Image (cartoon, rainbow, N blue to C red; front, side):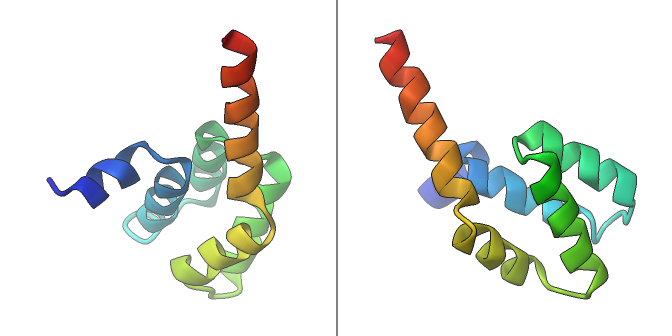
Amino acid sequence: MSTTELLLRTSFEGRVQRTLQSYFRRPNDVLLRESLIATGLTEEEADSCLELLNDRFTVSEIMYSLRQGGTFRRYEEERAREAAEEA
C-alpha cells in the first residue's frame, strides 16, 4: 500500500471521500447520510451532500464543495484544539 493510500485511509477527507464513493456501489440515501454523520460531518453537511448527489454531482464536485465550505479545515482545527487541551 502506498503512502498516499495510507494517508487517505486515516484522514477525515479520505474517509468522507470513500463514504461518498460507496454510494455508487450501493445507493441508499439513509445509509449514506448516517455514514457521513458517523464519519464526522454535521447533519447539515450530510444533507447537503445528498442534495448534490441527487442533483447528479460527482464525488469530486462534492468534495470540492466541502473544501470550499471549510468542512475539512473546521475538522482539523477541532482536532488541533483537542490535542492542545490534552497536552
